[in-house]
Length: 465
Image (cartoon, rainbow, N blue to C red; front, side, top):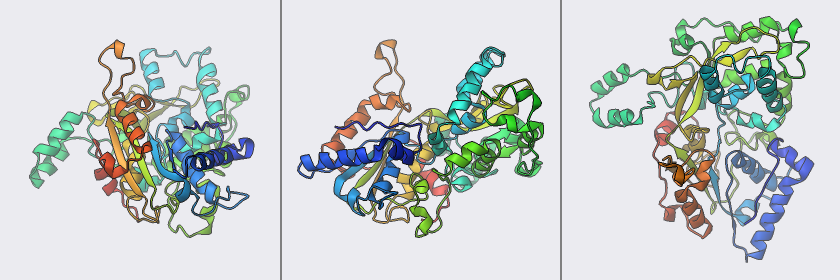
């Protein structure tokens, strides 16, 4: 076993430039295979490590100086399986509030419990602005922005998870009892569903309104200008000091943002960060994989703009937890105007149990960090069989682990805990990993095992494969 650590703050290609990290991993895999009589390696990436290793598989076969020069069959020769654990292949919506307001649902709940605590003059500049300044300096965090645009994550009126109920018992009851099509249509109409495709909405009323009723003003033409009162706050202010009142108002006046317009929004509010980071990452969908531009490393960690290696004997697994509320979209509001304050924040007063809205965040099924859609879609559909993203037909498997929290304090985090990090302690997952490392194939493991609606949701996504 070789532990492959890397500096996760850097863009993936820059880990090679500064630390030769990709070369070190290549050399260690080659050494392991050579000293074990040619037995291939099993790679086990966790979380963002899955994107890092996706980048590695392109880098190792690409010619120098951009790549590692291993040749087109290096992965086929050296890798038996890639066991991705809690992989955010398509990004995570919770990256958006990190960039916009340096917060998450947890921060918004702190605001609800202790109003004014984070906004006072002592704590706010030291906490949220500092987090924002740091996050805007880490190029790797841009790799977490949702990928695939509205095709994957949905539009103002549609999302793959539409109809999802956070009361899973009720959802199961509805799906099993309602068999008559007419009754099914009636049952659906009685249950309100969140517009998950609206990743950011300024106001709960905007998040719920029919799209035709939303009067939006395009923010991209707004005139920016320095806020006079923020010129003393630049050490903490990131790029917001250049927004001006008109720029801030324009962002709110656009009302609601989908996955595609979110990227445009980030270019507007943080142009320096995005200009630097988008030289290393991309978030679109490739139309023509033969286009020479996809040979550039900025596409290598986006599974929708790169191809898997030619390695028909290799297997790729996606292991992840389910059963935990996982942030999917947000209700925002303008912050009170004050010196050095971030101009936007999650509206912690926005709640609606029926649409899975709590503390300003709408939730879907996932592991508490990565939604099921991001972790499972590639293996469930986009890589399944021979596709333009998987030209050699590498076999893919989805293995879900149902979260069950510990029942007593004596259990600690528990062996059935399948939250994003705690899943590494899951006995069921550890057993599956060991069996693969000992030689078992995906079929011998039992093939796919799912608890969520990942296959149903994947089928709703209209993606040419």
